[in-house]
Length: 247
Length: 375
Image (cartoon, rainbow over all chains, first blue to last red; front, side, top):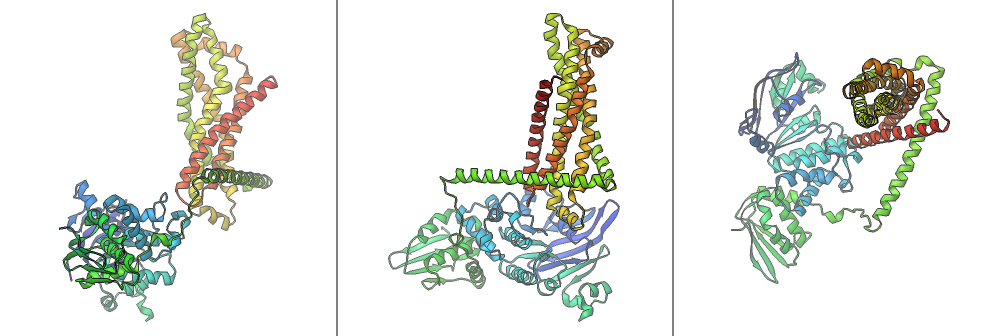
């Protein structure tokens, strides 16, 4: 497989006296759909936040697209950030902007495309993420949780990022919606050559979307690899987590 | 070499060649050309993509839109030289094409829009007023219920709010009333000195401070501090559904949130005003001594002789009304918050403006009434 695009090396995270991660290392390769799995409170989202520079870590290093995080000038940081986008768990749409403005804003800020085309791209991304066209001009406060998530996905896709980070993308969606979401992510990953990093504990996503994943257990990386490999791995936490016992 | 090259254009056909990249960076210079071609009709359109080196989603969408503008089913468009990846991207873009014209947009009539806005404003105001009445009614009802069962009253929460809105406000109240006392005395001192009526500084500072200024300054500071925080606290709780959670458990938000705040300010306001009285007059005393040569002892003796106790009492009498107004407005605006985080900011602003206005209006009303009945 291809080069590693994100390298997390020996990262330790500590909040006050509480150790969240103890010396963890993962590698995410270009073009793969990678999952970060773990129980509630295991620090899945914390790793994601460390990679996208929203959170500081105590020791270790993180490299994204060949750049060392924490060792960059302001301009380099802005340049690097254009390469990724994030779908937050509850959408995090800008409440003062309506849906289409939310999707357009990265395009307006970072490209010189004509206004009409920006509008067209935004509409298309909204259709792609499965938001009904009636919702185009609504404000975030008028949307349901699932609709917010779809609009937020459209915003995350607006700039065709190289890396797409998804924080529990299917939570709060109905099962059919969640399955469609999974399918969409796979389709996008292959068509737009995306690298996708998903924080999840949705079994359907794990089975049908992820190429590889890691499981965080008791502050450490317990496992990293494919589902096939995980099934062979004898550890009660993994079996429990992937509900293998039931099969 | 332009990335969008028109090779041939006549009545029978249009042939286009795409060179190099077709992506976000390269679209801007060619867009007007694309638009011009789009607006025309051709029986046959040939698009040669053999020398296209890169295509991103924006480019694919541009192509898809161009094709769609010639014919819905691609029958008159011939695409050549596409590699499989570009082809699937174009197909994906075509699948996700959404025309703006398909979306019905309710357009406001330009001429009628002021009328519509005014109407909306009136309806909103009436609704807010009705909501205020029902809020007031519910609060009164809950108040009587709590009075009947005093052990249900939230004493601890009330004490917390007395500390937060009262005790913690003392430093800023002290500073403002001190400065106002200082300034009043300073400006008055010059005028009085002209007449040699130095000693009247005592009457002027004490009466104006006790009767009008200290209560008003204290109330304005508290309105700015507490009306805003009450609205923001309750508004946030509404957005995070905490209020709904309370209701679902049978905890009445009025009893839990509103009454403790209202009683806290009802109790704290007179105390704050009394505190402001002392500090304000002290500010005046310092100026009296430094610029008019009236010693502290002289000031105090003169004050005891000429300033009636009723002035202090009138000031203190107003304080609970101010407290009631501030807390009620703060809580009410908090309950009006709906939906987005933006609305918290909106109602917090309204809350402070309302609270300050009603404090001043109430002060004027009480002044008029007291003067009319001769106190």
